[in-house]
Length: 174
Image (cartoon, rainbow, N blue to C red; front, top):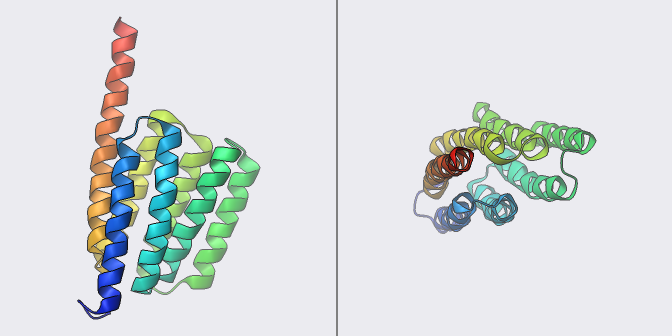
């Protein structure tokens, strides 16, 4: 894609919209609010990746929206988790274009495990792995908004994890 073409600019803008939702998500200490903002961010990312011509990344972002809803509706239901993982594999196989499509796939798998199996700090720790996978993808495809979003997601998530840990520790020592 040509830099500064209308499609490239629209793709980058989509990444910046997602960035706003990412900041709001990881700044939240409430898991439900985190997940809601992640839904909005992934809708924006799906459009962002479609404009970049990245089918696996767009497909994974679309599945993330469904996965978050299912994980909220059916928490810790491993049968549903396995269905989501199967759908993730099917979408990845159907849309695979390049070696670096592994990064959106890893992000989707890590995110699925985090959403269905974990809560609190462990969930956020695995979501840090999700951010690293998406960051690698963003850097490879030239997504400015995506790279910034993932760096901020990672940093904000780590800070929020520290705050949660510190608050729990203060409660234990009180």
